[in-house]
Structures are given as structure tokens and as C-alpha cells.
Amino acid sequence: QSEVEELSAGIEKKTAESTQLAEEITELSDAIAQLRKERAEATSLRQQEKATNEQTMADAKAAQVAVQRATKVLKQFYAKASGDASLLQNGGRLNDEMAQAAQAPYTGMQSEHGGVVGFLEVILSDFARLEAETSSAEDAAASAYEKFMDESEEDIAVKTTATEHKTSKREQTEAAIASEKKELDLTQQELDAALAYYDKLKPECVDHGLSYEERVRMREEEIQSLKEALRILNGEDTLV
Image 1 (spheres, rainbow, N blue to C red):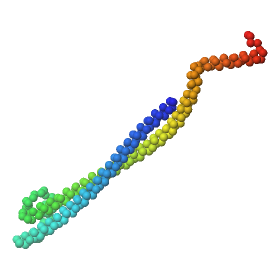
Image 2 (image 1 turned 120 degrees about the vertical axis):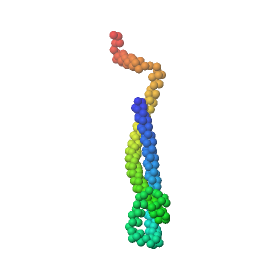
Image 3 (image 1 turned 180 degrees about the horizontal axis):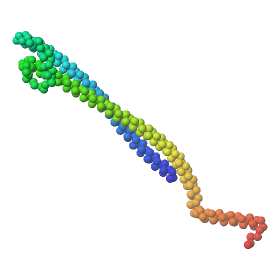
Image 4 (image 1 turned 45 degrees about the vertical axis):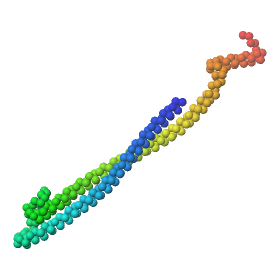
């Protein structure tokens, strides 16, 4: 019976371990699924963000070209209208001034050139700044995305390995439980057979109300009587 109790305790312990492993496997699987979902969402968002940034930079570049052309045409018009031929001879100066305007802080309608030309140069500066800031934001977003994807991929790999390990361990535990249950059934059958035999013999002892010592004594007396009867039958003197 102690063997049955030991097997039962072992089965109970392994069953608890198997249940705990199953819960941990479920938690890991859910975590992996969540990470994959977040990766998919991050990829979708990154693609949209990248497309928006690229379009913004392309528009800013195109706008700068358009503003530069408009400014050039307008300055040429003003030069002809005022008879200032020196402005046409210093085409390189325009590019230098535009480059300086791109680095200058936003000043609204205020410009050293004044009027429409100054306004165009402020717009040119704004578009140049927009392109630069968008490019910087795109680089930062791309870097953050790559970092997240690398870290999440590593996290998934670690959790997947842990899941495989725990799954294998749970399978081994379940196999051990099945083996011990089979052994327990056989042991229980043997115990039941022994108890049945004991129950069969027990009434005989109880009905006679005799202890083991009394039954041994009666058996010895019976043997002694048989010996004496045998001597009488052989004609031997029974007197001592």
C-alpha cells in the first residue's frame, strides 16, 4: 500500500508540473503573437511614414526649384525695369544669398531685399528647412524602427526557444505520468488481490475465535494424539 501511495503522490506532483508548464507555454505563445502583431503594425506605420516623408522632401525640393526660378525671373524683370545691368552680371550672388537664407531663422515677410523678392526668399528658406527637418526625422524614424525590429526579433527567438524547451519537458512529464499511472494500476490490482485473499482467510480466523498461538498449540496436540494412537495400534505399552 505504501508503494501505491508513493506512486499516487508522484503522479500528483508531475500533474501539477505539467499544468504549470502548460500555463507558461500559453503565456509565451501569447507574448510571441503580440510581438509579431506589434512588428506588423510597426512595419505598416514605417512604410506609411517613409512614403509621407519622401513625398514631403520631394515636394520641398520641387518647391525650392520653382521659387528659385520665380525669384530669378522677378529679379531679371526688376533689373531690366530699373536699368540695373549689374544685377544680371552677378548671377552667382543670387545663389549665395539663397544659401544664406536657407540657414537663417524664419523672419516672415522681413527681408533685406524687401517686397516680393524678399518674400520669395523667405519661402525658399522655409522649404529648405522643411526638407532638412523631414530628412532628419526620416533618418531618426528609420533608425528607431530598425532597432525595434532587431530587439523584437531577438525577443521572439528567445521566447520561441523557451517554448520549445518547456513543450519538450511537458511531453516528457506527460509520458512519465502515463507510465506511473500504468504502474499504479498494476500495483493496485496486486494490492486488491492481496486484500481479497486476506478477506477470504480472515473469516476463518474470526469464526473460530482462535489466535495464531492457540492454533499452533492445538495442531501440536493433534499431532501428539495421532502419535499415541499409532503406538497403541502397534501394541506398544502406553504406560511410562
